[in-house]
Image 1 (cartoon, rainbow, N blue to C red):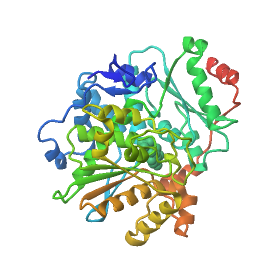
Image 2: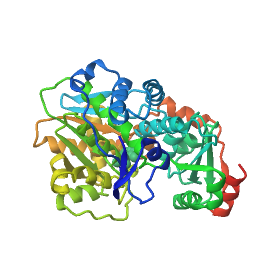
Image 3: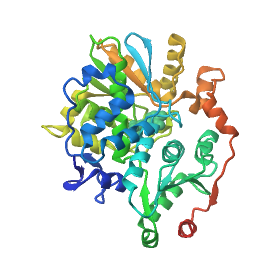
Image 4: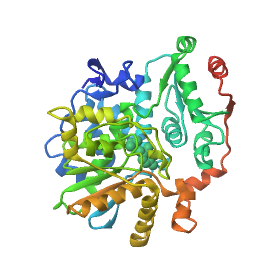
Length: 434
Ligand SMILES: *Cc1c(COP(=O)(O)O)cnc(C)c1O
């Protein structure tokens, strides 16, 4: 399977180039030329397969020619080494917990798989690959953990000093080994500008191999389709249609769900649930895509005003006829403000004694609204552990929510970070001196 750029269907690359480049030079996004359906009988055999076994089958179907079976098994078993269980609130309402990985958010799936895949494609290169990442908080932790010990790869994570939470900072700064944290005296935008300038700099490019671990890398999307199958497998009642409700920002998770659907997973509907950054729900109701500056909310990982995966979704749905009509048939949009998000957190706690984080709460609310009109079996993607948003949770629920050991033990580890100004000259000389 080759991949093309959404800006130029004739620009074809193989998986290695798509993964190592991240973005095509024409500023489009890489997409598989064709999303094949899984073997007959695969869906009915899900119950007999573990999550890694499902992942291996999905990968074999998507890019059989690029990676040998033994190596693929190794990649998957290293990357997908934690579960994605369903917790049933009632017979039609299920929470798919995607936070059992090292950074306690679903981004672990994508980051770990990308780390392994980049390590694999980097074999045989005689120079090390240097990954530069700017983070405003969450992504950095997932990438750091995902690339830890990846052979031949060094990771430099730039984060704005004093502007990430303590837990987030500890996730970036306590791993050591091939992960280096650079604490930038500036904003997230400064960090991003430093990374951008580095990629454009001739001296740096001549001296070292650079790559990004950007969220739009196709290697991050593919593993996010695995857990839709894993969720479906765990549903007991197969008599009703299944819908997935997906709290969304850049829409990578939802796009991966549509990949699973295209591969043969029987899904009736995907609920595109957002906070007040409602670009896609607006598009679904009006047919017009209007990017806007993002607005801050308590579900801040979804504060996105120009969702990058819209291009991929539009590409998938434009196949026959109107993109908008096709998209509306499979996607329903919902958006909620902070007050309704808090109410949903409270409702889930009061009715089911389950603590849901503000992102998952938006997905929950969308599902409940959809279920008023449709008798379906619903799965809400719970994208992060609630303790990552402790101040908001404490305030919303009115008590001190417990922190799991995995997060609290982090706070005791020693922080190691290199201070950096926001001047590109400083960053450049640091990299040149490595
Ligand atoms: C990144 C993130 C999202 C949004 O996911 P997209 O794939 O960008 O739509 C939702 N919830 C949490 C907790 C996240 O970290």
